[in-house]
Length: 79
Image 1 (cartoon, rainbow, N blue to C red):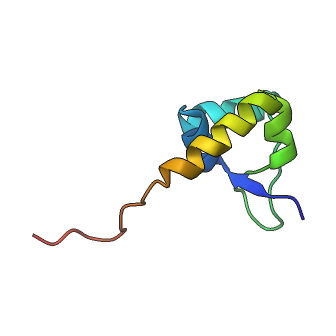
Image 2 (tube, rainbow, N blue to C red):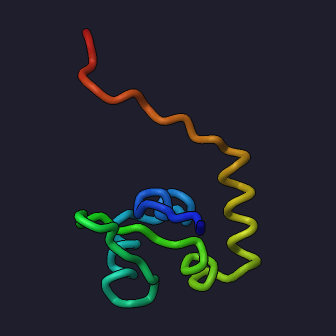
């Protein structure tokens, strides 16, 4: 099964706004789909490779793996 990315993941990898990625999808520049029963976009790896090219894709995936961005905990902050 092919790997799929969320809109925010693609935005983080390409260092652009999630709104920019959404605009690319709506303009038809980047192929994406909605999983059944949701309004969220999912972007197949093959579509991302096609959009940015094989060479850039391998560089971006390698850089993302090295960074290992740690997500902030969600919820209320205690003071």
